[in-house]
Length: 237
Image 1: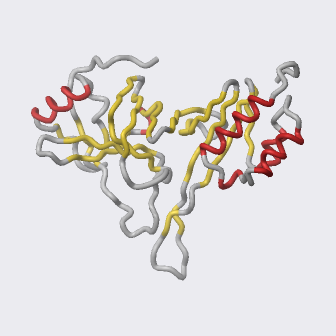
Image 2: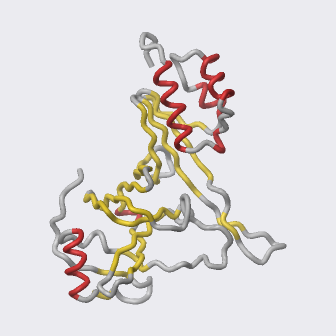
Image 3: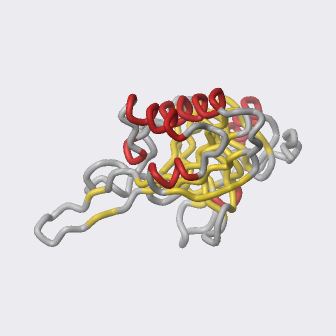
């Protein structure tokens, strides 16, 4: 359950795994309390720095810029924060301003992050298979939900001096009116759909040159809308 802010302010940053925790000045505490209320959860984390400067590409969901969004930490929702999703290390980076006019970036612990949204996309920590809790992007249309887990890999090639981050890899699940199934390619997706003529569904996929590997969240949402509107209500699920 999402609850309201209620904890006393005590802003703590873990500078590294070796150095002890350092309390921030009282003026920063007052600033954060004024902006987000008296809660220590929001600004607890590890100080973030760019450790991938010498790696080609970037490790984030869509770009390197932190964007306005919201995050749920240990059941408490925070709006109007700037965040980004590192899909290589699977954590959120959060920006918060300081009195001097500059800002700090910290890593929010994945163990305490329940859900987040930014740039119009919503993500939630879920257990959908034996890999345990992971962040999934949710695309919902009526009784249909597509879950997408995003990952990047750091690649080293012996004939190159620089490592690089791979293109994003996606793992999919489809909740089809209460029936949850994984899928990894277009044919497998089609096999999960009942109540919609296969000819119509395949025609839609051909018309829009739909390829699962390249599909954007917006294209997936339109596909789910087509399925929802084409489903025969008398056929069940």
